[in-house]
Image 1 (cartoon, rainbow, N blue to C red):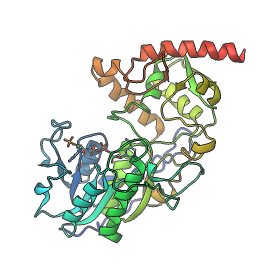
Image 2 (image 1 turned 60 degrees about the vertical axis):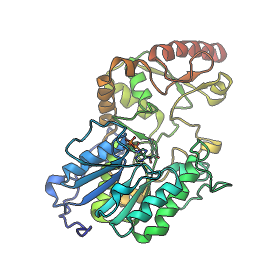
Image 3 (image 1 turned 135 degrees about the vertical axis):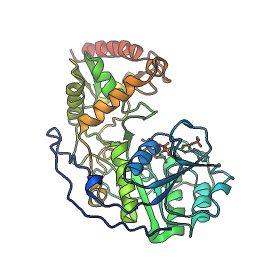
Length: 382
Ligand SMILES: NC(=O)c1ccc[n+]([C@@H]2O[C@H](COP(=O)([O-])OP(=O)(O)OC[C@H]3O[C@@H](n4cnc5c(N)ncnc54)[C@H](OP(=O)(O)O)[C@@H]3O)[C@@H](O)[C@H]2O)c1
């Protein structure tokens, strides 16, 4: 292993205006820094965040190895070393090798995270584990930080990943890494990760829908907060954590200052040059109509704090954000590049059972459902 601390000239990142949203739009300039090249092992690397991580690490001069089953996006990175194996029972390819740092993107089951963490102990200088804000016990408290209560499970032997177990399993995975690596463990808990390459379409729905124009049905109120992080901001920062050999637990969340749904949609409208108008509908009405929208949650009750997670500690550790309109433009450009079949079926978006089905659904079907929802809203509110 080469030493993991990098020596570099901190240049001070340039501040940039971010559309009046108060987001810091700075990103360290690699050209002006002297970064000590690291050897980085990524458990995963070919899904959504992995490719962004690989590209940023390459731009910083690091050497990468990807470990995965060789099933997902196998065409990517022919120039990068790929080790084939399975986290569940086949880690042979990792034996007898050393790296400066491992980044674990694909850990969901504590037993499997423990297996790789134990096998690599002594062979890597740092273990960076990608967890989730779902690790927290609840989202009732706006402004909660990394010390907030974590989720638990009644039976810690459960391995099935469901909506209910995903978060508590992440907690147990984190604990396995921390137990084995101590100060050499870094835990990152991202919020919704968005941007080019997101296969879920959860956040992508909003810029794509706004770009279509017309009257857009929107849940909640204009001032409801909304949080997410561009995959490129998240992964670039994680590589810099590796370069700086930074340990600890961090919420990987953005933006820097509270962003409202209204502000996000306004930037989406301006970025796409659409004529969209927005009609806001309260949560009770939407509940009565069996209607739902991705990403947004009511800023009250059980989800009062979901979109007000503190990212202060991560920012102190160097997390920076690109301007929102860049994320929106790049996501729209990526969406436009997808083939017709992919674009004809959004994997998330407006749903209103039974009229708008729950699975992949065309934008046309969602917009037709929206018209009907808007009519009912007007009938109720006059
Ligand atoms: N998306 C979000 O909004 C969000 C929010 C919070 C946290 N997170 C977390 O962020 C991480 C992001 O994942 P990503 O999919 O974007 O990462 P990624 O590194 O881009 O892709 C996942 C990789 O894992 C590999 N993999 C899957 N199962 C494997 C196995 N059994 N053995 C070996 N390799 C395996 C896949 O390749 P093969 O299929 O070829 O094996 C793929 O390369 C996850 O830990 C997730 O919990 C995501």
